[in-house]
Image 1 (cartoon, rainbow, N blue to C red):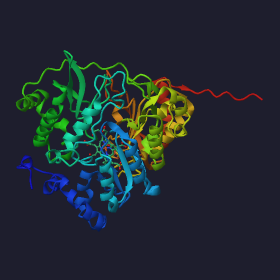
Image 2: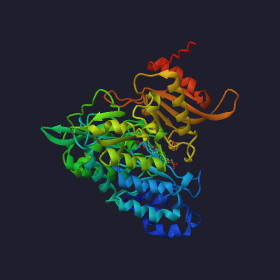
Image 3: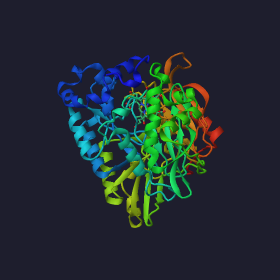
Image 4: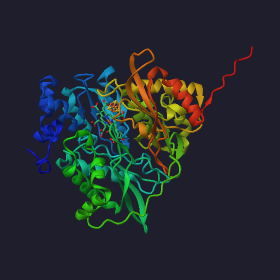
Length: 514
Ligand code: SRM
Ligand code: SF4
């Protein structure tokens, strides 16, 4: 059934497929798919519509799917961790789990025959996978230390989970927003930190005369065709109004966004086409008069969460640990469940830079906590370059990938840490193709994967390098400074760059005197 907002429009093939049958409609068929097996499934159901339930066909590993969850605000409790661990464990060496750049979790190796049972088990512990992929509203991100942050203006937990329920109709699937022109990213900030500007819609907490509300920023996007941070809408809304405003913004774009030239479907293209003033007026027609934004004040420097920090609750601490390139195995998930049960408040937090925070540790348990063996694998005080390294999935599983990001990021960061001292944490974002899931242009250093010729004229994995990307008070996107650096020359090029532009110093190795 063609939706009213598609009528009369020129539709590309993806749009035609979505119009022919909404992704949410296959929910009733999942048991049937599990029984018949992927080989017998309709190709569009298999490769497109399953994404409405978080299940991604992987051409690199046919039959072994990726399952993307929804973890609003990146908060998972011990019971949920144990369920995820047991799902990953059943796939043996094909099973693993990644922390994503949206504070979220993806599982590997999942079989379609297991999907009904897995979705049931996840549902029992209140985890949804609904609308976590493709042209849907994605995982809602927030302050990773919400509720324990001594500097927070608001606790984002309530807003992120309410927003997720609003966008997905409590995980049942929301047909209002199941056929958007492209993906949609929502984020809610809790303090003066400013690190969410790459989202389509961001709410920054600002009080007016002691009334709590949010200033609204719109239009962030990172992609192969456009990299832009969000801009202020010049609107401030009371806290309880953010859901209504989100619906209005989403419906305006859903009804008027580009449906033919797919790369131009993202919200920012629509916004740039009509202009921010006109868009604001269109919102007001449905919402009523918008209050002017008094402006957000951003803190000076991004905060690092590694190590042990005081919470806003007296006598309680949170611990930030480093998970190299965000990869977790079944036993890691089980260990994390145990450690947060034994030492913390029985939950962990995921960060957008693919690390973990354990909250609620009592003063008298800190020393014993520091002795736990899991902290050898996931250190509290990681080496500086590894600490700032973020990486997308890369070519092990992703069909778009032009490079093996995760493995190369691990190797290069480890080698650079051995050779260099870098005082301040620096974000180095690796992305395996221009889609920028690893958010390259946000990084102090950004690496975008491609194929290029090496000195011998052989086609090899390579990277374009950008520098200077940051969020915070003086937010800016990175600038491209080098093109097509072959993967095997990358470490040396990065080393020179770190010394020349980031004040890194060669480590001095003193030889032992006999
Ligand atoms: Fe992404 C598509 C992985 C965050 C921009 N992204 C893909 C696909 C689904 C492509 C595919 O089918 O293979 C990748 C799945 C690979 C796999 O097997 O894991 C993929 N994206 C990821 C993740 C897992 C990267 C990671 O290692 O963390 C992140 C999952 C987030 C989540 O939990 O929902 C992920 N992707 C992002 C982000 C960062 C963010 O959201 O903050 C971006 C840039 C921000 C943005 O969207 O503006 C991003 N992904 C894209 C794009 C380019 C979108 C565009 O407008 O052109 C694509 C391609 C597309 O959508 O057609 C894409
Ligand atoms: Fe795949 Fe490219 Fe996204 Fe990396 S950036 S996960 S290679 S689509």
